[in-house]
Image (cartoon, rainbow over all chains, first blue to last red; front, side, top):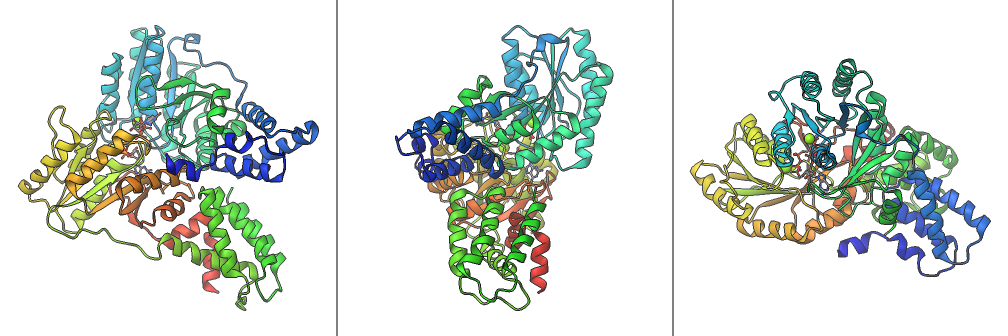
Length: 292
Length: 306
Ligand SMILES: Nc1nc2c(ncn2[C@@H]2O[C@H](COP(=O)(O)OP(=O)(O)OP(=O)(O)O)[C@@H](O)[C@H]2O)c(=O)[nH]1
Ligand SMILES: Nc1nc2c(ncn2[C@@H]2O[C@H](COP(=O)(O)OP(=O)(O)OP(=O)(O)O)[C@@H](O)[C@H]2O)c(=O)[nH]1
Ligand SMILES: [Mg+2]
Ligand SMILES: [Mg+2]
């Protein structure tokens, strides 16, 4: 708690003191944005727009500046996109990707549980055949939420697992298929090729699928998130983001630049390790947490 | 993204050319670029601020070496100070004391503790020691199985917890197990946890008390952003960590977290993880890290030759 207070500046306390709107205030705002991982470039962009609005509106009170900032951030995070609606295809196929350890497998369990509670019948696919006990991890989650998991042996070809799973999903009439992939560095060309191959197998078997390709971003990540998003998007065309680990002290500000640059919406946020620790993304709430 | 930096410095170099002494004014220009580079590399804002003002102090009034431009001279100073801050030279693990010597791995969720535990076991085994792995993560599904599989790959024993056994009881039993297996080193894997999770931080304190570890290593993801200082400070305050391992440096993250963590804890970074394979663990090199954080390997090697 102390560490947090001594080292990170809360934007709320910067602006909500009824101080004059001056250069000092703007500098403190800038500092707060950088410390929330918004990044140098996006911060300059945001500060430029705020300065512009301030010139026009000439607010007397600093709390007005906070509103301007909030509006600006909410704008940047509001991406026009079709909703993520699993009833729009049957089976609706979701591929989940991301670098190592960001929370893909846990998020899949949470999502399957979330949609199961809305009466969908999900099928999970253990296509991480590489990491030690990755299959067991997904299987345990599957048992916990009573959702079947399609798997093969460790070391099996992930594309083959996915192919089997699609056949199973079709014949058993599942509504929803969620594919867990191995964590991989976006810079590893051969591993990104493997992901493309999975994608090809899916769309060959089921034209139009995958219907959603999620990239999971860890809120603790700094500016590298941009590189991750660019390269995953280039390889498999990301259609949505999930930001995990927002229950910690990291603000996840990096997704502001990311949404804006890639035009990809955030779908869900992860706020803990439990099954219910997932929420549909709400830009206003996100911005409030970022500033708070 | 990073190539801009070289271009920007070139601009600064030109701007500063033909000036014999570093003055407050000409340094300022160069340091602005350094500041941006460090922030883009995810070095914590406050750490950057302190660092840049220290450089400014040190640089003002210095003669410029004849082989360098004033801009390059500033970079040289920055590089030297970064290395100093990162710890000059690699520090080995400390494995003194009566057998079994214990190494405790701690950190946030997903940072790479379990993988790193197995990597360390492999390294120690190659060094002629007899390590044993201890799975004290009873929360994450299949965490124990993960360590068991990795132990099998390394070819070292792994303690087998009983159903529902607590972390405290696991590490106590593992101390005896080490004796029975003739192991001289225990490497203890713990569950990922948030630094603000009181109960789980308290659990780590109890494990520390039982084990009296020779090393408590904080495992930090190299992709971590500004929050690295909060995490490191909290773990250090709670446990007095003895060192840091930076993982996932095989990607393209600049790794400014290394600087932040080092600055707030003063603890050495001992190893870096550079891949998922078990031999992908390397000794930390402050000079390489410094170049990486600045995103300017080429310029630095040019300066070093001068
Ligand atoms: N605090 C917190 N922890 C999370 C969250 N989501 C996942 N985790 C934890 O992060 C760690 C890694 O999660 P996984 O789901 O295994 O991550 P992954 O991306 O599948 O990892 P790899 O398959 O190894 O690449 C686990 O300890 C999870 O419990 C979250 O929202 N908050
Ligand atoms: N590319 C790369 N991946 C790594 C490295 N170290 C670990 N990983 C991967 O990161 C992911 C998480 O590693 P784990 O060892 O499970 O992390 P952990 O800290 O034990 O996770 P929790 O127990 O859930 O807190 C796995 O996919 C690992 O294979 C590394 O140096 N480079
Ligand atoms: Mg996984
Ligand atoms: Mg682990």
